[in-house]
Length: 347
Image 1 (tube, rainbow, N blue to C red):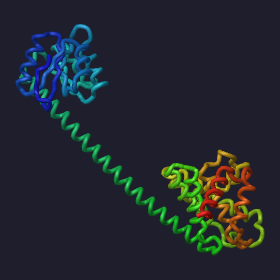
Image 2 (image 1 turned 180 degrees about the horizontal axis):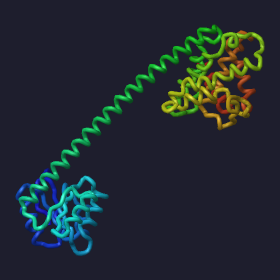
Image 3 (image 1 turned 180 degrees about the vertical axis):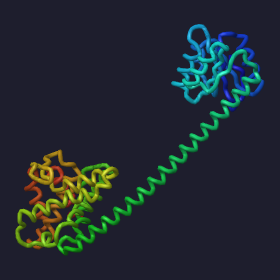
Image 4 (image 1 turned 120 degrees about the horizontal axis):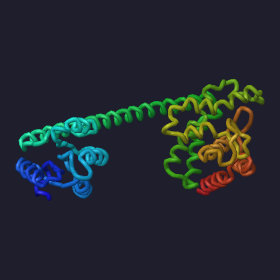
């Protein structure tokens, strides 16, 4: 039986196999402003809990035919942890009531129980639970606010770091008139190819950033090696090769938020036939972002004047890309690159 009441009133469920006791509790507590429900057994109480809106508190007898109050307590603590629980027990069951407290009951009263004492104990439980909820909400709000501030600080730090890195790339290219603007051009080519291939915007953004920073590791490469006109020695070539892993290490703080960026920096000198560096990846083992930047990087290198050779014209560079598609470059990406360049020429 449910006594109608305003929805805002605390809802209490009385569980007792004796109808006279239930009637006294429901009537007495109802007069004190509570919305009351009652159930004669644990099973019917669980049905009410499952079918009706949440209860604020359960007042349950311990000893009942069939399943007892302890069984109900276990179910309530598992399914409805926010619901208060007050156990009623006879004098000889006080030790059992203490055991119920250990299992999560909020309090217990020894029978027989006067309505005034019951109402006072209920008010105390509801007040304590309300205070605990308010404290949890306050802690949750504080935690969310703290996480937001940490995220904002991390974002600000990341943006500052990224600006510093981009400045470093600008300074790197300023050391060499032959490669000035190289990273920006590679980024523009790579983004155009990524768009042509229909890649997701988030991936395109990562490719843009990866291409801008793909040579950051060359900051540690000696000018004598970068600007050498003659053939590099074995040690000098190894020094050049290290720029991919050095760059990855320099940007490692970005790994969690920008994994594709790190893939580009590390793997843009891998080859489709597995003869590239640093890991000897082959085919689709090479991340697609790195395969795109690899083609864009090679093209810009060919059409740029270097200390050891003159710049190739665009037509010759595109022919070289097509000739090297398969063993060195991804054929599909070369085709996309040629299509993009042809479209640019046509426009």
